[in-house]
Length: 115
Image (tube, rainbow, N blue to C red; front, side, top):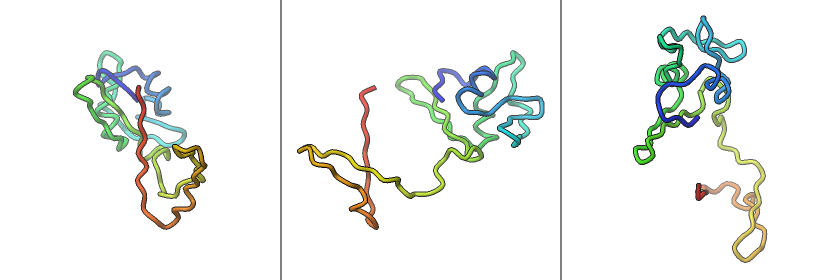
């Protein structure tokens, strides 16, 4: 979830994370985490409290002034294994490269995007 401030609407929080702000706390399905300080007096949601209560990483990019809220450890969206699914990419010369050929070896996969 990308933010410019540490507050958001309850609707946006739900859209971006799947966590709903309810009177009983922050809820996803049948899991509810008490979060009495999450809702501010103006009705917005305090993202720092959400991050703390749901064990979500919260980082700030000083250059752009944006905040990034990562997935909750309680949501099931974080990686729970280091097993890579079948992956094949094309090399610079056009031949396919199958990552399964590296089975049992440690590798670093660096990705880049211009946006």
